[in-house]
Amino acid sequence: MKTPPRLTYLCVFCGSQVGADPAYKAQASLLGSAMAARGVALVFGGGRVGLMGACADAVLAGGGKVVGVIPEFLRDKELAHPRATEMVVVPDMHTRKRIMFERADAFCILPGGIGTLDEFFEIVTWRQLHRHNKPIVVLNTAGYWNHLRGLMDVIIDRGFAHGGHNALIDFIDRAEDVIPIIDAELAAPKPAVVFKV
Image 1 (cartoon, rainbow, N blue to C red):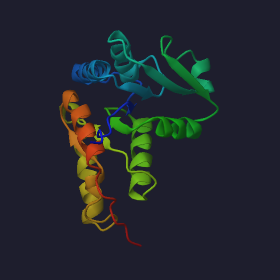
Image 2: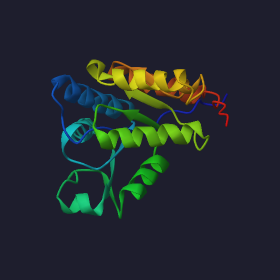
Image 3: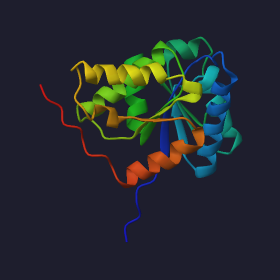
Image 4: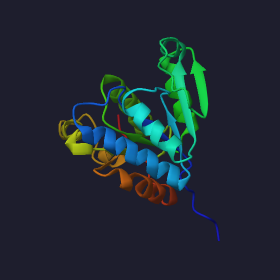
Protein backbone atom coordinates (compact mmCIF):
# COMPACT_ATOMS: atom_id res chain seq x y z
CA MET A 1 0.00 0.00 0.00
CA LYS A 2 1.41 3.36 -1.08
CA THR A 3 2.07 5.90 1.66
CA PRO A 4 0.23 9.18 0.97
CA PRO A 5 2.44 12.22 0.38
CA ARG A 6 3.20 14.24 3.46
CA LEU A 7 4.20 17.84 3.94
CA THR A 8 7.95 18.21 4.37
CA TYR A 9 8.68 21.82 3.31
CA LEU A 10 6.19 24.63 3.96
CA CYS A 11 6.73 28.08 2.47
CA VAL A 12 5.40 30.79 4.77
CA PHE A 13 4.75 34.27 3.39
CA CYS A 14 4.31 36.90 6.11
CA GLY A 15 5.18 40.36 7.32
CA SER A 16 8.55 41.80 8.30
CA GLN A 17 6.64 43.61 11.06
CA VAL A 18 4.78 41.99 13.97
CA GLY A 19 1.64 44.10 13.45
CA ALA A 20 -0.68 45.81 15.89
CA ASP A 21 -2.40 42.72 17.33
CA PRO A 22 -0.33 40.39 19.56
CA ALA A 23 -2.33 37.50 18.09
CA TYR A 24 -0.39 37.82 14.83
CA LYS A 25 2.95 37.00 16.45
CA ALA A 26 1.40 34.39 18.73
CA GLN A 27 -0.10 32.49 15.80
CA ALA A 28 3.13 32.76 13.78
CA SER A 29 5.02 31.24 16.69
CA LEU A 30 2.37 28.56 17.17
CA LEU A 31 2.66 27.59 13.51
CA GLY A 32 6.44 27.37 13.81
CA SER A 33 6.17 25.14 16.87
CA ALA A 34 3.66 22.88 15.11
CA MET A 35 5.97 22.61 12.10
CA ALA A 36 8.93 21.59 14.25
CA ALA A 37 6.82 19.02 16.11
CA ARG A 38 5.71 17.46 12.82
CA GLY A 39 9.14 17.55 11.18
CA VAL A 40 8.07 20.16 8.60
CA ALA A 41 10.87 22.46 7.46
CA LEU A 42 10.24 26.18 7.00
CA VAL A 43 10.98 27.92 3.71
CA PHE A 44 10.70 31.69 4.17
CA GLY A 45 12.07 35.06 3.16
CA GLY A 46 15.08 34.74 5.42
CA GLY A 47 14.38 37.67 7.74
CA ARG A 48 15.11 37.84 11.46
CA VAL A 49 12.41 40.46 12.08
CA GLY A 50 8.61 40.60 12.28
CA LEU A 51 6.43 37.56 11.81
CA MET A 52 9.15 36.00 9.66
CA GLY A 53 11.52 36.01 12.59
CA ALA A 54 8.86 34.83 15.05
CA CYS A 55 7.94 31.81 12.94
CA ALA A 56 11.57 30.92 12.24
CA ASP A 57 12.53 31.28 15.91
CA ALA A 58 9.74 28.89 16.92
CA VAL A 59 10.77 26.29 14.33
CA LEU A 60 14.38 26.47 15.52
CA ALA A 61 13.37 26.33 19.19
CA GLY A 62 11.58 23.07 18.44
CA GLY A 63 14.62 21.59 16.73
CA GLY A 64 13.28 22.11 13.21
CA LYS A 65 14.91 23.14 9.96
CA VAL A 66 14.73 26.69 8.58
CA VAL A 67 15.60 27.57 4.97
CA GLY A 68 15.85 31.30 4.31
CA VAL A 69 15.93 32.85 0.85
CA ILE A 70 17.04 36.47 0.92
CA PRO A 71 18.17 38.99 -1.71
CA GLU A 72 21.66 40.42 -1.37
CA PHE A 73 20.42 43.94 -0.64
CA LEU A 74 18.39 42.76 2.37
CA ARG A 75 21.22 40.59 3.65
CA ASP A 76 23.51 43.61 3.40
CA LYS A 77 21.09 45.54 5.65
CA GLU A 78 21.76 42.81 8.25
CA LEU A 79 18.18 41.56 8.15
CA ALA A 80 19.06 37.90 7.49
CA HIS A 81 18.20 35.45 10.26
CA PRO A 82 21.53 34.57 11.92
CA ARG A 83 20.50 31.05 12.99
CA ALA A 84 18.84 29.78 9.81
CA THR A 85 19.77 26.19 9.03
CA GLU A 86 20.38 27.22 5.43
CA MET A 87 20.47 30.71 3.93
CA VAL A 88 20.21 31.07 0.16
CA VAL A 89 21.36 34.51 -0.99
CA VAL A 90 19.91 35.57 -4.34
CA PRO A 91 20.41 38.61 -6.61
CA ASP A 92 16.82 39.89 -6.68
CA MET A 93 13.23 39.51 -5.50
CA HIS A 94 12.14 37.54 -8.56
CA THR A 95 14.77 34.86 -7.95
CA ARG A 96 13.80 34.79 -4.28
CA LYS A 97 10.16 33.95 -5.08
CA ARG A 98 11.14 31.34 -7.67
CA ILE A 99 13.44 29.48 -5.28
CA MET A 100 10.91 29.64 -2.44
CA PHE A 101 8.34 28.15 -4.82
CA GLU A 102 10.69 25.39 -5.96
CA ARG A 103 11.69 24.39 -2.42
CA ALA A 104 8.13 24.18 -1.05
CA ASP A 105 5.42 21.50 -1.05
CA ALA A 106 2.75 24.02 -0.03
CA PHE A 107 2.23 27.65 0.98
CA CYS A 108 0.81 29.41 4.04
CA ILE A 109 0.08 33.13 4.07
CA LEU A 110 0.16 34.89 7.45
CA PRO A 111 -0.66 38.55 8.08
CA GLY A 112 1.64 40.89 6.21
CA GLY A 113 1.85 43.94 3.99
CA ILE A 114 2.34 44.74 0.31
CA GLY A 115 5.17 42.24 -0.14
CA THR A 116 3.08 39.45 1.34
CA LEU A 117 0.20 40.34 -0.98
CA ASP A 118 2.60 40.26 -3.95
CA GLU A 119 3.72 36.77 -2.99
CA PHE A 120 0.15 35.62 -2.39
CA PHE A 121 -1.21 36.83 -5.71
CA GLU A 122 1.69 35.43 -7.71
CA ILE A 123 1.45 31.95 -6.21
CA VAL A 124 -2.35 31.91 -6.67
CA THR A 125 -2.00 33.12 -10.27
CA TRP A 126 0.47 30.34 -11.04
CA ARG A 127 -1.97 27.81 -9.64
CA GLN A 128 -4.86 29.30 -11.60
CA LEU A 129 -2.78 28.95 -14.79
CA HIS A 130 -1.89 25.32 -13.96
CA ARG A 131 1.80 26.01 -13.33
CA HIS A 132 1.47 24.10 -10.07
CA ASN A 133 -1.15 22.43 -7.89
CA LYS A 134 0.43 22.90 -4.48
CA PRO A 135 -1.87 23.66 -1.52
CA ILE A 136 -2.31 27.32 -0.55
CA VAL A 137 -3.60 28.14 2.94
CA VAL A 138 -4.33 31.63 4.27
CA LEU A 139 -4.11 31.89 8.06
CA ASN A 140 -6.77 34.51 8.77
CA THR A 141 -5.60 35.46 12.26
CA ALA A 142 -8.10 37.72 14.06
CA GLY A 143 -9.88 38.29 10.74
CA TYR A 144 -6.84 40.02 9.20
CA TRP A 145 -7.56 38.67 5.71
CA ASN A 146 -11.35 39.14 5.72
CA HIS A 147 -11.14 41.92 3.13
CA LEU A 148 -8.89 39.81 0.91
CA ARG A 149 -11.42 37.00 1.06
CA GLY A 150 -14.16 39.47 0.17
CA LEU A 151 -12.08 40.81 -2.73
CA MET A 152 -11.72 37.30 -4.15
CA ASP A 153 -15.52 36.97 -4.04
CA VAL A 154 -15.95 40.34 -5.78
CA ILE A 155 -13.51 39.36 -8.54
CA ILE A 156 -15.60 36.25 -9.22
CA ASP A 157 -18.95 38.05 -8.88
CA ARG A 158 -17.89 40.79 -11.32
CA GLY A 159 -16.77 38.30 -13.95
CA PHE A 160 -12.98 38.59 -13.76
CA ALA A 161 -12.52 35.04 -12.48
CA HIS A 162 -14.67 31.98 -12.85
CA GLY A 163 -16.58 30.21 -10.13
CA GLY A 164 -14.34 27.67 -8.49
CA HIS A 165 -11.26 29.89 -8.39
CA ASN A 166 -11.91 30.49 -4.70
CA ALA A 167 -11.31 26.74 -4.24
CA LEU A 168 -7.64 27.39 -5.06
CA ILE A 169 -7.21 28.77 -1.53
CA ASP A 170 -8.23 27.59 1.94
CA PHE A 171 -8.89 30.31 4.51
CA ILE A 172 -8.51 29.09 8.08
CA ASP A 173 -8.50 30.75 11.49
CA ARG A 174 -6.14 28.63 13.62
CA ALA A 175 -2.45 27.88 13.19
CA GLU A 176 -2.88 24.33 14.48
CA ASP A 177 -5.11 23.53 11.48
CA VAL A 178 -2.55 24.49 8.82
CA ILE A 179 -0.58 21.24 8.60
CA PRO A 180 -3.57 18.84 8.81
CA ILE A 181 -5.39 20.72 6.03
CA ILE A 182 -2.31 20.68 3.81
CA ASP A 183 -1.61 16.99 4.48
CA ALA A 184 -5.22 16.17 3.59
CA GLU A 185 -4.94 18.03 0.28
CA LEU A 186 -1.59 16.44 -0.56
CA ALA A 187 -3.21 13.04 -0.03
CA ALA A 188 -6.22 13.99 -2.19
CA PRO A 189 -5.17 16.83 -4.53
CA LYS A 190 -7.77 19.28 -5.73
CA PRO A 191 -8.61 19.09 -9.42
CA ALA A 192 -7.21 21.91 -11.51
CA VAL A 193 -9.67 24.76 -11.94
CA VAL A 194 -10.77 25.27 -15.53
CA PHE A 195 -10.04 28.76 -16.78
CA LYS A 196 -11.59 30.30 -19.87
CA VAL A 197 -10.61 33.15 -22.15
